[in-house]
Each structure stands twice: as structure tokens, then as C-alpha cells.
Image (cartoon, rainbow, N blue to C red; front, side):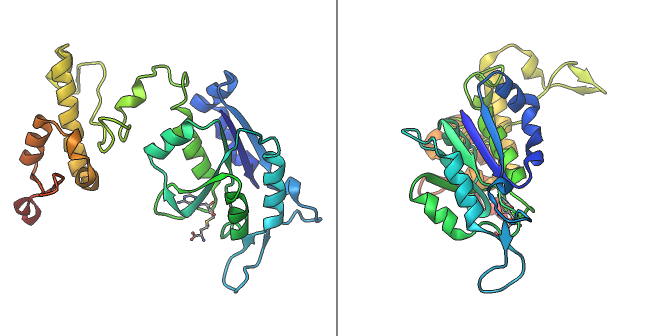
Length: 270
Ligand SMILES: C[S@@+](CC[C@H](N)C(=O)[O-])C[C@H]1O[C@@H](n2cnc3c(N)ncnc32)[C@H](O)[C@@H]1O
């Protein structure tokens, strides 16, 4: 996969040289190219921002440097068009589902902004040519889009074939498409079996694959109902087996007329 990042702080992307992403780059699984937006400015001060039309506080990133940068970086786009990923708090939420989708594309171009964001016409201009995704990493506002780029690249890179040591490991992750789509992963344990008089749940030592799988799924439901009840409310009823339903009932959830699950009236009152 090829990844281009256009930024006024190339040094902010240094973490892409370490750990999983760094190793994927060293192995040639990821071709990451960082570009300095100021290379496409033509004035003495390398200006990339200006005051907003209509007034108001803050500055807006000028369209000209972004246009020149994007034209240059995407000049080689032939058959293979890039996905333009625009980090912005006003974008669609970044989810594991989107990470999976982006991991299947050969080329991502990121445009992390600063100030109040990029002049809207840039997004419109490239939206006519490329698949543009405006993506938010959460309901808070950061000073710039570089940290969101690090987040998105890491989430995408670990899904690329051969990047994780164990190809199976992301299938059991929280939010992983399939059985975990609307579930959080439960607690995990390693050796020693007893630490400060705290024991690892016995079933995990039993070697009984069926019981271990059931225990993990139950724990996933317990954690999800406690921390993210919204996920249970939207989860596909067809994905729930008999034991899932029994556990949900024990945890104070009931089946609604449309087959989905909601907190039972008595549980809500408590
Ligand atoms: C100070 S923010 C601009 C916020 C903008 N005025 C608003 O309220 O939507 C500057 C840049 O940081 C990045 N950014 C900040 N928060 C983000 C978030 N939650 N998700 C993705 N990008 C974010 C974006 O690139 C954004 O253009």
C-alpha cells in the first residue's frame, strides 16, 4: 500500500518510522511518503494560511498550496486512483469498518490541516476526481490533523496482510467485522496463573476450546453492556445465539418487537 501525507509538520509523522508501521515500511509492505506543504508556496514566508472570508477568529488554509501539492503528489494517478483522507472533526466517525475498507485500497493520500481547516473548494475540487473521505477520530477538537493521521495509518496498517505476526489476531479484536462487529473484547490474561493472589479464570486454563470461546464471548457481552450499551442496541439480532440472548436477559436486556435488544424497563429504573 502507498501512503502520502501532506503536512506543514513533517516531523510530527516521525512515529511512522517505529514499531509495527516502521517495520512494515522496512519490509516494503508500506510505502509512506511525507511531503511538506510549504514546498508548494511561492512567497518569502511560505504562507499557507489567510484570514477567513466572512470574518471570525482563526485562519484558514489557502487553496493554492494544497492544490499544487495534491496535483504533484497524485500526478502518477493512472488506473489506480488514491483515496483522499481528510481528517476533520466534522467528518464521518473513523471506525474499524472504515479501517478495513481503507486497508483494501492500494493508495491513501492524507491532508492533515492546521488552523480552522482547509478552504472548502479544495475538498470539492478533488471530490470530483477522487474518492474523498472526511474522517473524524472522535468528538473532540485537536490542534491539527497529524495525530489523526497517525491513528488512522496505524489502524489500517495492522490490517494489511503480513503486517501482524499472527494474521488471525485482529479477527477477535473489539469491533472486528464478523462475530465481534458490535462487541468490545473482554479481559485478557497471561502467565503466571496466580499473581498477588489473583487467579486467572479457571476456564482459561482448561484447554477446552468451546468453553474458552463461550467464556470470552460472555465477557465481551458483559464489558459491552457496561461500557458501550449503544453497541448492544444496534447489534444485528441475527448475530446473537441462544446463550448470548440468555446472558443479555440476565444482564437486564430484553428483546424488542423488531428483534433488537434494549435495556429492560426494570433494569433502567434501578
Ligand atoms: C483546530 S482543528 C479545526 C477545527 C474546526 N474549526 C472545527 O471546529 O471543525 C484543525 C485541524 O485539526 C484536525 N482535527 C482536529 N480534530 C480532529 C478530529 N477529531 N478528527 C480528525 N481531525 C481533527 C483537522 O485536520 C482540522 O482541520
